[in-house]
Image (cartoon, rainbow, N blue to C red; front, top):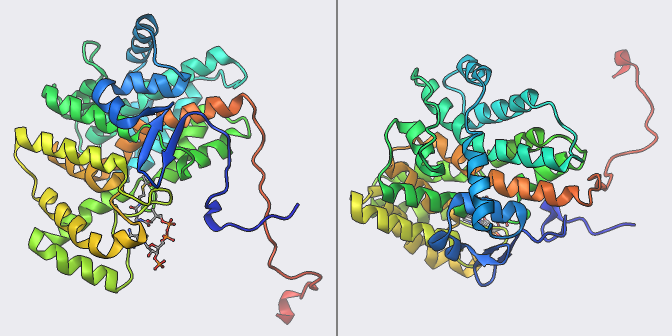
Length: 377
Ligand code: ACO
């Protein structure tokens, strides 16, 4: 049956889902019906991951079990560490992460996705091991040893410890954990869809997550957080922001960290991240990038708000990570290690009623052409 062609599949539903919902007109994002703002103030990343994956907030016993399962699967095989050591140190961390996640699947051969028990352990492993891989690569590429996880540290605390070799301040741990909650899920976006297309072939979850990581990398999606910091560096000081923004918009170029396919008001995640920036800066001193970002938002607002273009999640997240001393090219891997719970929740949901993705196309080429021998072309 012919359908209208929608470039970018804009507005075309690709699934029925009960995992998350966005109200792009009011700026509301809910995970399983709970607003992200409430999750940030009351929950933790690990509890939110459970909520996304299994559809309900865990009881005390369920949460104890889930936490213990994740904690005990944070280590990675030494061969994964060896694999990271073989990669070129100037390579992008998203490429290293994608390669390591694809390789991870080779160590866990139970790939029958109809086995519910096995799927649970795959989800545990992926949620648990992505931070270890990200932190390991961040160190190995600088010639430093990989730091194994510490059993006495919580999820975010342990990640920052594996990255920096220091147990973070409680406020840093809280701010970072909130960042992970805000990045954990976001309905049918490019990386989730990429993973679901792969999943629809009944490929194993390591391959599914590797597909999603590839889609997240691009600058129109998760890669925008890196580009935002490059832009702030290029501007250099708040008094130069106005000229920069005007010049960009005059040249019809996009401002990174602005705009969204669904939100026509300010992304609620950007609002929470901005509050986190302020909290962090009160304790640790401000960041020159924050002043520039505020000025960009003010100046751009005059022109872009009438088109429904506002800061998105990528606009303020990088400023927080930068203040924590995290390398700019690690920002998108941080996004991936949070979003893996959302990707896996969609994977589990789709498996209940899987149908192979096989869209149609509108052929715009010729028919009945003759083959011309090479000497006559
Ligand atoms: N800066 C300036 N103008 C913009 C921006 C922006 N960031 N985003 C959109 N516009 C303008 C376009 O120039 C276009 O204007 P026109 O109608 O006058 O030609 C109009 O808004 C529509 O733009 P599209 O790119 O067609 O809109 P789409 O819905 O596809 O955009 C997207 C969504 C890709 C996110 C876009 O806003 C963008 O490229 N933003 C910058 C990159 C970015 O921050 N990406 C992260 C998104 S959040 C995430 O993935 C986690």
